[in-house]
Image 1 (cartoon, helix red, strand yellow):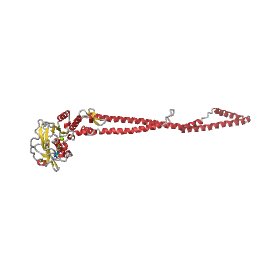
Image 2 (tube, protein in one colour; image 1 turned 45 degrees about the horizontal axis):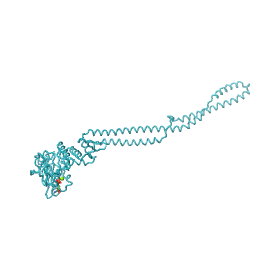
Image 3 (cartoon, protein in one colour; image 1 turned 180 degrees about the vertical axis):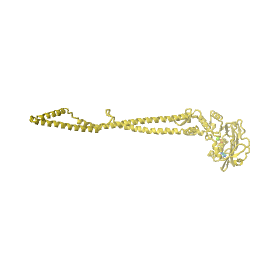
Image 4 (cartoon, protein in one colour; image 1 turned 30 degrees about the vertical axis):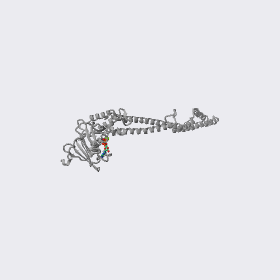
Length: 439
Ligand SMILES: Nc1ncnc2c1ncn2[C@@H]1O[C@H](COP(=O)(O)OP(=O)(O)O)[C@@H](O)[C@H]1O
Ligand SMILES: [Mg+2]
């Protein structure tokens, strides 16, 4: 849908103007300063957007006139907006063609026809880096939020794990080094105590044996005196004494003191065994945490990779336009978009506006006079290739460029092949018929 006819009466600087672009993709409005060029283009957006477009226009009705009217024929719809001198405004949208039906919620209908950027594509170049990138991503229907959140989670978790590693390492450093000759298991002290008790018992028993031998020796002495009387007893005692002496010779005392010393040493040994165990545990924990941190690093890298793949797979609306994952900014041919030339930025802005695919394919280029020939040619090419109607204002006093406006009226129409503009009387318009009346 494009503008077939713009008719304006008494809006701002304009008296009465009718413009019919015909098949032209570019509608240049030319003229001297303050003759009504901006008023003509403003009229399009005033008709479409109403008060939203008129924030800086508190007096839309031309001084001295009773009322203003803008009629925009879009083919499928005809938009009519009126203002009274006291500031009241009224909008009607009817279907185009032969049978005109008045439509409900006209402003809502218009809002859905017009793209945000078409009103002013340069608004795109004025957006911040982040907003520009968001707009491109939303046009591409790319939602990187989920990947960003996953990366953020892994990052936070790794931070916590790294803190645990530092704490465990600090504790490990505080522990004494372990001796190399420490046994694996602690010494069994109760077994040693049992061994100690048995050794004492054995000592007592052997003491008894020795005492017994002594007694026998004395008894022998006595018996020898009574040898003759007790020869038989003496012999028996001798045998017994022999046996006892044999055992006496074999006596080996257990080293009671040595066992005692081992008991004393066991405490110290066991403290070292405990310290060594704690060290082994902490070393194991540090190794496990470092492994976990490595896994999280891998996961962070994987989300970055997935993001890069998603962006690489998306089809950018502008050749050379790309999304820099590191900075979250747009780049044009590898350079931040904000640093591209004015004409390059203008091209991106216009292509972005077109990529929004609004139903009404009309766009306004402000300050077209300051564009160089190359930028202008680029704009015209884009308009032709994408079947857009570009309305632009140029300061040109020759009267030979586009629609030439003088003193609020069209003085010359230079649009090739277009029907005459502004020079014809406005055809009478039948009053709108409501939907009810049609039925
Ligand atoms: N409501 C109005 N009634 C009469 N003149 C107006 C009104 N609004 C603006 N103007 C005049 O219109 C001129 C600007 O019109 P504009 O369309 O911006 O001109 P151009 O774009 O050709 O330079 C100014 O001289 C301004 O005083
Ligand atoms: Mg102007």
